[in-house]
Length: 571
Image (cartoon, rainbow, N blue to C red; front, side, top):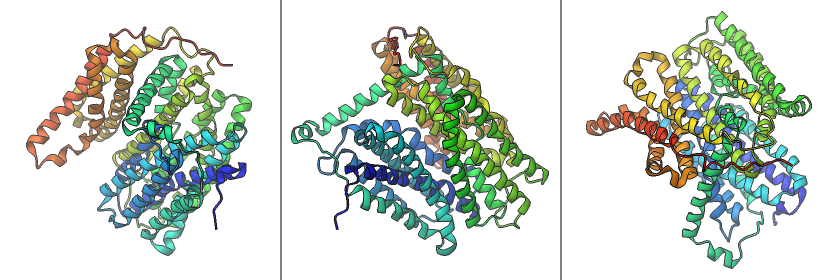
């Protein structure tokens, strides 16, 4: 029996992209809910689980870097985007199956590394699916298709999270890896393989040699950096959008691993955790639609202000209940059930799902308002990537904070810091001009600010132990600064071009070294190699200091001649 090519009809295209997005949601639900729950049940601490969940989101924060490769490397036999989707889904299945052989919790490091590779292929798949959608969906199909795609991702998360937790009671944990892999493989076999995508003709394929493809990918990445940089500093609203994307999107604790960690500690069984995840997913999905509709009627900024502020209310309620019952520090799983606290967790989680869903239905729309339509794909993709980075940072710091401060204080800090992004909303209004006379000054100020913070690392690291339990959280902050500085250096050198002078090459060297600062967490593991450890410890001081000097030097360059000053008016 020949399977249908779903791209050949309207209904088929809608079904195809719905199912393709299901494969994106399944691994996320599996890792962030099912695996995180089992890790806590096996005694893994909240900090390690937070780092595990954070690593799962990291590839999505850098998926913009995969776009040029998906664009220029193509297969004449399998199709341009279809070939990428086939490859990535195959690798996703293989990495999932390989996890069965990794013992938990002893092999958590290897387990996390494999899942990081798995999710990297998932992020590449997302780029390829979106590219296929842009090139196959007609304009009158795109609205409905996008709704179905996000619905597919939500269903996938429910299948990978709640579905696996329901199944564990009957099959155990290990077989669930095969179930998740089989779910992805079924879409590969029944949806992706039968797809028919136009391929390059012989002349075009011959012209796209390997060397040409690599050069083309490099040019695309450089253009992405230039376009993103210019669009971000073009207006005050666009630059504030960067900070808005990097800040927490309201209180986030009940949407990350903290919820499942606490559920396990309070005595909830796997099927109960699965039911909690399922209902919160359903309520959140429905609220997304309502939130978007209300924002269209009442205005995006006032409604988003309300949504972000109210997300803290369920978090504060749960904090109060835990404090009243004396439940502060994490406890070993397997204790007696605590029905009153379980009830409070249910109430807080369901209420939180409403407010979080309302927020998600509006946040993306307000980012579109400040996006320059001339570089819409570039700028909006960068904003979305930053939001994924913010999720990863939140997951990491909250896991550390729970072990250092306990649940109530962590929830309080989350409830207070989460809504801070609303302070940026007044400037994030729909733009008519996307580059003004202050663009060069904004670029210079960003270089100065990042440079000063990089230099501040030196005195901080010299006496970081004095911060005690707060030290790991401050370290997370500096990690975010190092990532932002590295990206600024890479983009800024391309924007300045020759005007950067010697500092253009210095920026190229410093950017990867700043990203490598993430490895400072493993300095102690070099104890058996004292000479290498001594060099590594010195570099931990030298790299941020040198990066700070380069950033301050770039701030002295002539940005006015290189930042795009041409206005782009909407129609």
